Length: 232
Image 1 (cartoon, rainbow, N blue to C red):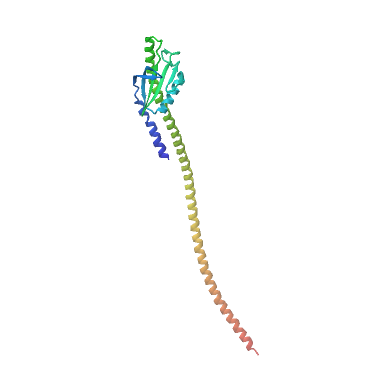
Image 2 (cartoon, rainbow, N blue to C red):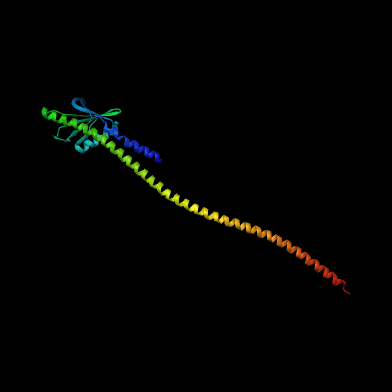
């Protein structure tokens, strides 16, 4: 488990190099919105449709008034650098180009002078790059969060191992001290056994000696009794 977490962390952090090499090429593209074709611009983002859609929605929701339509979004009051938009409608479409996702932005130019259109189109191209970059930044932030979470788990595991080492060391010292105590006790016990064995031998010898002495005394008593019977 511990080694697996380290491998995951290295894999996540290593993905940062891939983010640095992303392509921000913007292409001119015409899209149909309902029954009308609009000129616009498209950028391919290296990510699945669901994730890119979520991040794109989050990005424009924070910078404009975004409305979801049947198969596209309409954007008004988009806050862009050097271009002030009020009621000018910007169209947004997000298409699955697995393994990439295409983000398209176009504008409704009716009633706008060409210099104004040129400015907005230039700003839209820059906006597409910002949207793509926001996706890569968000994904990288998620990887960092995942790596930091893994690092926290690894750190806790490391601290747990350190605490376990302290306990194991203390237990080992106690066991070694107990071993010495038991070894001393065993030596004493062996000495007591030898002493008891010798006492048993001495006891047996004493019993044999007493038995012989008793036999001698009984023999004397028997002789004295016999002599007593012989007196007239």
